[in-house]
Length: 379
Ligand SMILES: Cc1ncc(COP(=O)(O)O)c(C=O)c1O
Image 1: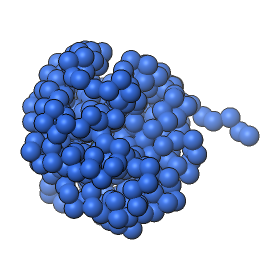
Image 2: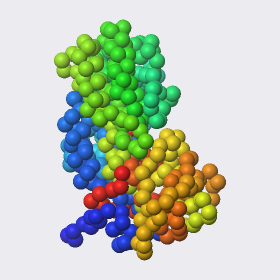
Image 3: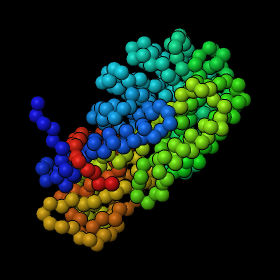
Image 4: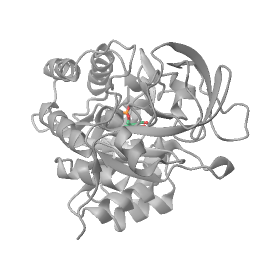
């Protein structure tokens, strides 16, 4: 078998491929080390949120780093992970599903964990599976504070409904869990404390002693300009709050991180197609790998790669347009880049492992398909 190519960094990729197409650069060794540290430090079961980045080599790396549980939102995600690694468990944590996919997930892929946030979904889950051996997690709506991406306006039962739903799951003789998601890129551990305090009240009022407690995703990655506490402070906050709850000894604590695991293992090498005064046009944009920026307005680290000389140390603010014909294909905020940036330069954009390839469209025929491995990415 030919040995695989691992470039030293994005500059080496530019030298070897001179790519006129965008390229994802993956630091898989960094991902493995980071994942192992997360799995060891979190005081419970770690489910990787497939939606964040389902690229097969990323999933394989997470598996090799010890992840065996996967938060999935669709049948294709379930099939991907269960067929690639038979000793994994997929959890169906999308609160709205069709009967057909619930049945297929249950019968074909052995899925036993389902989330609901409404009585109708609970009825549907029971009918589609027959209920044998399943765990039903009730998704609770929590307050969203200091998050970059809201996840509570669409899903989650409000307090009283969650109490009734949990009681209903219990009455049906099913194993019960409680789940929440504080919102993505959560910048304060207090959000987990508050959400767990709310869970404690739901448990007390419903009188149901749950077997599973799922604190969701939302753990942050480290983007420029954001002050974020180390992850261990988030884990400590969760452990401290758990101490105050009267849970069964065998209650399983779970989390569903996406961004915190994969954001910093990938950068994007994109090329400048044209410069017009204070605007540049690059070959990826908000319909592609950069779609999340429109909602999160996150700042991303950028550095210019030029092969035939050095770039100016002076910077100026540029409007950065993507490759499609749509006028809205522009990054929501201007970017500080070298003032002599020109056609043919590459820009390595860091921190793009989360919600980049997984959220990209093929609008105008553009899509980023090339992935290479590197020893280090810019972040
Ligand atoms: C149910 C669920 N779990 C986990 C995640 C992963 O969240 P994050 O990437 O913020 O960790 C999401 C993100 O949308 C989600 O909807």
